[in-house]
Length: 282
Image 1: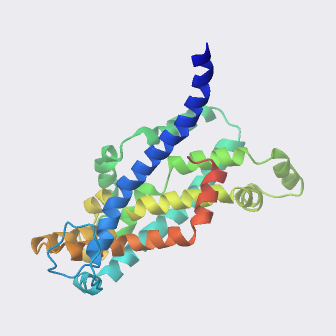
Image 2: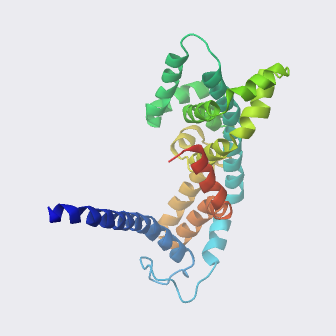
Image 3: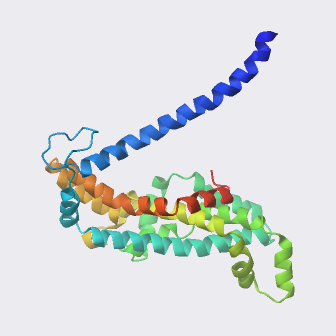
């Protein structure tokens, strides 16, 4: 009987410790490759310590200068920025409108249609490559940046998130706006969108991050070097650098590609976290 009484507090004390160890282990797994990238990027060429995790005593920026000169990174940055911005702008419109329809409008088959809409979340993106490629080619958008954007204009995740957020808005606010003569677009713009700003910010973060790192779909659509986003440009740059075994050069190029997202996270870290907490995204 005494053993059972004592076992409760012991379990409650050990569980947080195990959780901290698991989190620390996962953080270490993520940090080691990133740390090696930083060390290799600042290591002088020909130092003979490519696999070492210890920083060089004579760090240099030569790898960054050579990487910037070896590939057209400014153009790749502009292409990726155009793709992410174009997708996000359209997604915010379509997700907000669809979320409002599924949250507030009553029509036959709404639940079934919403369930069918969410089936997209269960599909592996690779399954849609061939149908999307045929559609883009039929629309004359092959080898164009709009062709990269087009399949992402509608988003099941964004629709689901905005629907859940709109359902939390008190219906009385919309009824009051209707009495004042506000139309459906005015109600969305003046009531729903301002009150669901954390969900919009959280979705924007997810959208920009995923499409900034997108590789397979742009690889299928883009052939022209001047239309490559950062991921394709980095892959082409890496293949040329691998032939010379210039690991410091590859690490510098990889760091240049990941720098915008890292800088944005460090600058807006508090807003990022608060947006996810407020929107309920785990």
